[in-house]
Length: 378
Image (tube, rainbow, N blue to C red; front, top):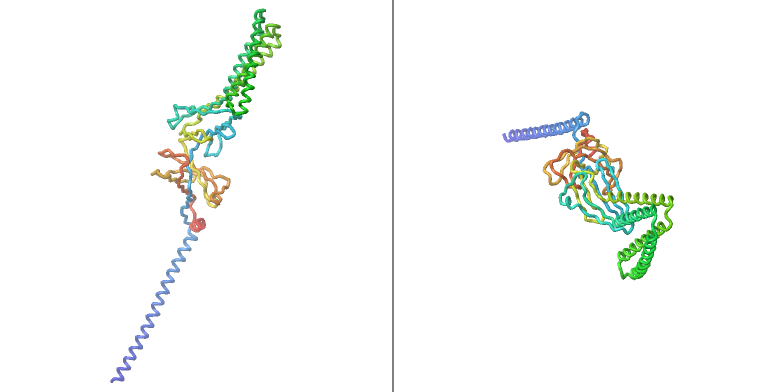
């Protein structure tokens, strides 16, 4: 009996071991089937991605700088030149350029138009300020004096005079010569004082200018004496007429230069004053803005004209929209990287910008396949 029980126990144990082996084989098959299913699914997904004509959006995200479409800037350079520049930032061209050269030692003064200095906005044709040149004012005053003298001399040439007038002319000439001698002595003394830095340069120049005027009056007195003594020939009268015409042309030229010193804005926009020695004033167009964006060299191939640009300006709740206008064909270096500047036109907006505002920009490029997408981002 005990032997039979032992044999039965051994038989049951063997059956159990066999059953365990069967279970282990079954689990391994299930695990292999699961791995096979995962692998097959992955292959199907990869084949779908590689060969199915499916495209996804592609964006290029870059920083941008908002600037006005048009800007008028007045600059005074260190070499005593005044520049007036009207720039078109969208097309990167200078539409209008004016340059005025002042003489060395000329004293210039810039005066704002007080009626618009506090408005912050100007219209095309407004006078924003005037630049005064002491040299031009002196030249104009001198030429007008010479013109008056030339015209007076012409009248003397055209008329004969009596003996009493000749005597008076002789006295006048003697008086003018005496005054020139006195003034020359003064100038010589002042020159010595100036060389010793005992007087200012301006005081010496005033005395020198006065001496020049006295010399001119001597010339006038001599001419008058000659006229009243001998009378003038027609050739001399013609020469005087030509001299008058020449002086009048010089005066017109001076007036033309003075008109250029009246700063008249060519566009509507916000006005900005500068407090450094170079820039004087700028007027920025507020009706149209552009954004310039430095794009990596490898990304500029994906950007075309008229593509949509989304612009986020800090402080503005609404996202702005624009379109790509042009891509520069010049490569630049920024932070040791090659970049190309892309310019976009900003569409409608409800708020004015401050020129130079930085913004986050997203350029919407053509959709690409999934392999191409990963190729671009890695």
